[in-house]
Image 1 (spheres, rainbow, N blue to C red):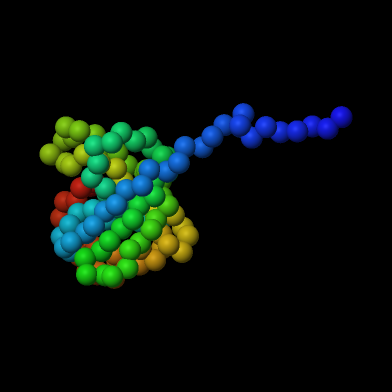
Image 2 (spheres, helix red, strand yellow; image 1 turned 90 degrees about the horizontal axis):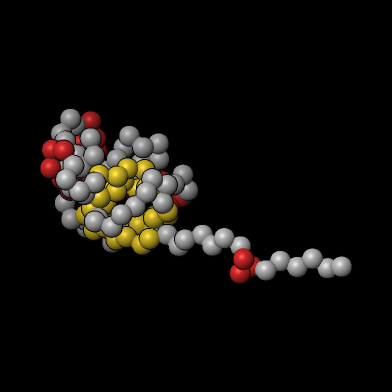
Length: 125
């Protein structure tokens, strides 16, 4: 007796949402960057509903950098509509520990430099 598997009955993993974020100035980068996440992360304004842990494929553009940073991250933060202090609605995407995520983190921290130690408000904290 041969056992066969039918792939059509296996639970399907939802495909990650694809979001694009173009940061045009240093102040916007500072406001969106999430250095308190273990591998870094980025706040992405969106009105689409997400849950913590949802997979996100983020295509990040940083100011004059000709490179685009493709990041396969996960939702680690949610700012709902109508949040306190007039914070923008959106999600925080946690960068993965892989090469792409850490390349983006390193580039962001290189651009921000000393501003990383600022106490100015951001989109998240």
